[in-house]
Amino acid sequence: MSHDAPDGTYARRVQDGDRSAFRMLVERYEGMVFDLAHQYTDGPEAAEDLAQDVFLTAYHRIDDLQDPDRFASWLYGIALNRGRDYAKNVRRDTYPFSRSEQEGTHIRDNGAAQDDQLVADERGDQLWNALDELAPTYATPFLLKYRNGLTYKAMSKRLDVSVSALKVRVHRARKKLRTLLAPYHEKSRS
Image 1 (cartoon, rainbow, N blue to C red):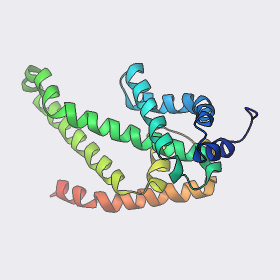
Image 2 (cartoon, helix red, strand yellow):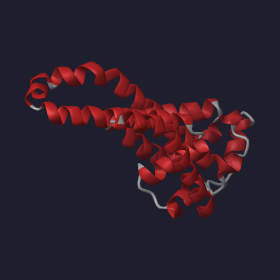
Image 3 (spheres, helix red, strand yellow):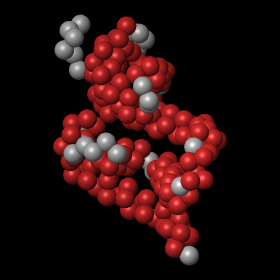
Image 4 (cartoon, rainbow, N blue to C red):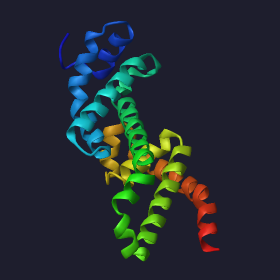
């Protein structure tokens, strides 16, 4: 089979039990997955581990892929979700104690700045929790736009979705996030 075959051809072969066809998909998308994984990790080793985890997840869930021709956007969604999970787990595992222990004397010297940082961290956690409530259909374009700084045109190419559909999804994500975050804003005002 030609290396120029569309993604759907390889994805169907994998779904039919041809494990070697997955190698072509990995070679085709390893750069994209590694780049995305690197955004969520602190170094190349952790990014490689996360990228490998993304491809293993994709391989094990390949039968869930309903439209093999949309493999790229499906894989990107997996990479984005695994990256978010990784970042969330790292924050949970390291933030509550190690950060305050390392900065113990600095906290006493700079109390006002520390308070501001704690408020910012809390708001960040609230945003991530609200993003977890969104369907990936809305969360993915929102994060690509505001976290990764992609244009709608670049998002359209990456996700294989029209620009107008992406604009609607980002708008709906903002609207839903506003609703989900409203209780936090009301509490901080009072």
